[in-house]
Image (tube, rainbow, N blue to C red):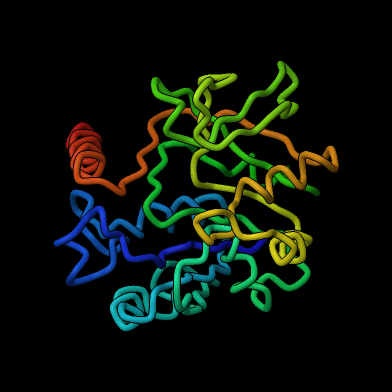
Length: 240
């Protein structure tokens, strides 16, 4: 199992903070934001990790993270530059050589999870696996509908009338066919190749399952969510 952290993009919603560095390098309490998705992968046993970055901040990431050796024995970081944000699914095209014949877990660089994904990753065999977390405002997210056996019934992107209250957070597991499937995705109206199209491809093959996420989840891409995540981490660390 390989790991990818997608940490590109312009993060215009966080200007002026992101005029000086990447969103994923902003502090969340006492650590750079990217440490949280990074340790999500490391704690689940993934040691070979590709970090996809924007060209203007490439040096910032290299200075912070280096080769990966200081993060543990056998840990190895690779880097690829995404010249322009072409959608989440583009990460699998950018990372084609890195993924090779392996399966891959991708996490978004601004997603912070309490959940331990070790079992979810170690039990993965084939197809696609996404995750679900109950939210009060599902209209803002990709929404997944599933049955009691965790079989996915439908996926909708920001639906006006959601079929469930379960959002799809930013961690996804796919086998290596995802590279070819990503290449076949047609750009959406906003000119991006959407991760939802990959989900629906695996769903059409009957090879997509879903697991529920426990604990807190933050998509730290706004000022409010960034502050909320920092406050939560602060309370948790002081409590421990």
